[in-house]
Structures are given as structure tokens and as C-alpha cells.
Image 1 (cartoon, rainbow, N blue to C red):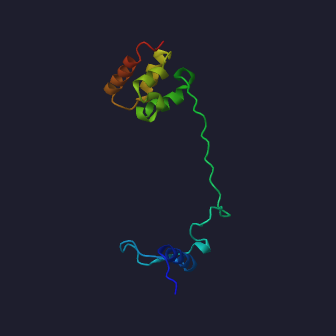
Image 2: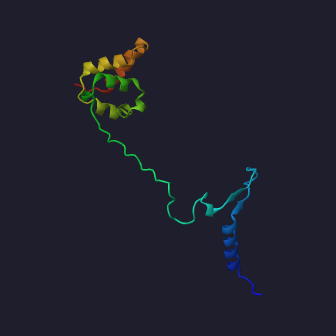
Image 3: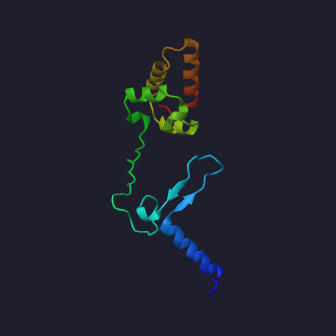
Length: 143
């Protein structure tokens, strides 16, 4: 009688598991029923690296280009929508530098009117404070 080496025993055990299927034990009692995994029936990940039929790889959607425009090129409705949102939600108003760059060369009177319209419905004192704060921030960049 020939004695098997550990390597031969391991290979034999692996072959038996592949033929019969492997029964997985529950993980710390979290699963009530043991699951059986059999790679031959295709229900689990196949051993070979060949692609399964019917499965298609999803293509990543290409995002459109982001076009940067200045405030003076936008219409009043779009500017009002942007000014009504919190500053952190809009790339153009998220920082002081971005705000100054975006409104560079913008007419002072038009911006004051837009800021008042954007803050309409709020306390009149706070509107004046907000408008003054924004106008002070844009000193030197407005026309």
C-alpha cells in the first residue's frame, strides 16, 4: 500500500470538493441554513477566466464638458437661481476668489438689483447687510 504525501492528499481533497460541491458553514451562527457552492453548475463565479454569455460590461458614461462662463455673459434668471442657492452649492460662489473672478467686469447697478431680488422675502435689514457685504467683497472688480 502506497502512502500519500500531504501534497497528494491536498490535491485529492480539492478534486473531491470540486466534484461534489463545497458546503459552507455558517459564519458565527448568523446564517441558519448552510449554503452549497458548486462551480460546475455556473451559479457561482466560474473557475475559468472566459466571459459568461449574457453578461455585458457596462460602459462608463462620458460626462459633458464643463464650460466656464462669466456672469456678464449669463441672463438674469440664471444668475438669480445661482444667487439664491447657498454659496457652497455653486462652484462660482463657493469661495471669495471664485466669486470675485466670476463677477469680474460685471455692472455694479445690475448686481445690486440681482442681489436684492435674490434675497427678497427676507428681513429688510438683513437684505441690506448681505448686499453691502457682497458689494464690499467685489470692490475693484465691478464696472
